[in-house]
Image (cartoon, rainbow over all chains, first blue to last red; front, side, top):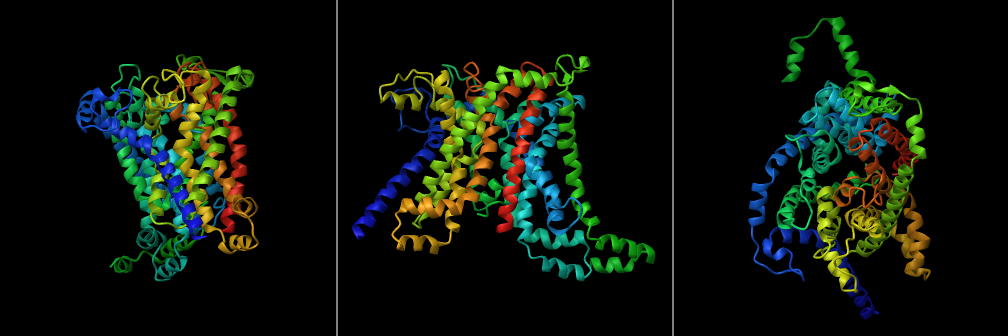
Amino acid sequence: MTTQRRNVGAGRAVLIAIALLWSLFPLYWMYSTAFKPEALDRRVPPVFVFQPTFENFERMLRATPFLQYLKNTLIVAGVTTVAAVALGSLAAYSFTRFRYPGSDFLPLAYLVMRMLPRFVLVIPYYLLMRTFGLLNTHSSMILAYLGFALPFTIWMMIGFFKEIPIELEEAAMVDGGDRLRVFAQIVLPLAAPGLAATSIFAFILAWNELLFSLVLSGRDTRTLAQLPLTFSTDRGTEWGMVMAAGSLTLLPVIAFALLVQRHILRGMTLGAVKG
Amino acid sequence: MAGYEVATVRPARAEDSLLRRLRRSRTLPGYLFLAPALIVTVAIMLYPLVFSLQTSFESYQLARPEEREFIGLDNYLWTIQSPNFLNSITVTLVFTAAAVTLEFLLGLALALLVNREFRGQGLVRTMLMLPLFLTPSVVGLLFVRLYYPGDGLVPLFLSLFGLDNNFPLLGTRATALPAIILMDVWRTTPFMFLVLLAGLQSLPQEVIEAAQIDGASPWQILKGVTLPLLMPLILVALTIRGMDAFREFDTFMLLTGGGPGQATEVISMMAYILAFRAYDIGRASAVAWVILILVLIFSVFFVKKLRDMQMES
């Protein structure tokens, strides 16, 4: 009996190891290629052991507009996050604390908006931004990004606000505080961890967005998600350089994902599943 | 501190009561909190959608915006009769069905594997969920490298089984879509894994133990107890993942751009090409609206399901 259980444990360990290999190997290969001397990259069979070097990163930073794209991404994703979290938490507070015509229907409407395919919106966005002379500006991208970030932040914050006991607010209201002050001084501090997690998710969403960026940006406003499209992938491609750019783009996303993993389920399922 | 200020600059009595009534009202502050988000939503969702509905009834070439003209249902008739549209719908459905099914099965297997308590469980969970967050376009580029004919790791691995390592996996009709599906399975299986793991961990342990005492095999327990209990959760997970797969764009753009020929031209790719390569805004809008209506029907079902779940919890 005991031996049998140990055997099952060993079998499970092997399976888990295989799963980890499957999950991490492509990522390992990206970072490994980025640190590999260019001359070794195209060797067959592939080289696994080598002296790591930063030369791919140095060359990439000189040859590509990585830093400019990075600046644009930070501006667009940063402003989108702040705006979406600010508007989203106000709306979520409204949905969880007040009853009025629309307070049942509107949250569901935001849920439907979360499901809308981006390509449905990108065509009118392009035409409207062109009409208003906003193509190739950060503003046009921030506005468009809000379209998917806002439903997301609203639903994340609804979940977090629901968990805050309403009695605390009622006590403060009785003491004569008005709604806005109760929200700012009592509810927001209590929801701070949720606010932080929501911000990080919204930032990741904006950081990763390709389609809106592709259509609305121009020479001066392209973002990092577009950088992979600028590399030609023909025989002469310098993969070390390409992977250096990719691995730097992924770095903040990986860091943030590790930070918010406790709230991941809520983020991915819009509150349907609590992690 | 603030309380004192209010007390010293007390407004006139009538104003005071009006102000207080406004602040205490159950309805008005609700609208005030909602107003900023609602205004933005009307501007960036409702208005663009109405605008796009309008262009879907027009002959509208991007290069000649002054020649816009109302043509009724022509764009819609073109859409539903177009072999391109039929092809795109088929490719999208095949991709979605295959990817989501594989991700569900693999995710369930992983969740069952990791479910029982062991040392390092949290770390394993973290490492298995990582691909989910990665920038899709970068993942696309990474897989272009992994699939690269000649020295890509996948063709080199396949050559161990006697296949030619110069075979262009992404450039061949028969293998391009399966290659993208495999990439999608790598990238988004963690979603299914995380949801199902949470579901498994929330199951009442007594029910499963009772089944074990009755002598049920692990397979019988999975089929007869675990899966039926998880069914609402599974439906939600399948729907969310299905909708996301249905609109996938980034990785297709990177891996194949819709080719070879139109073998991987999913519906988002078709709309993109129609609008921004063929500059046919009218038809592109009609395609978008046909999809929008399908998605709306589907999400109404989903929203109902989700609301039932939230009420239960």
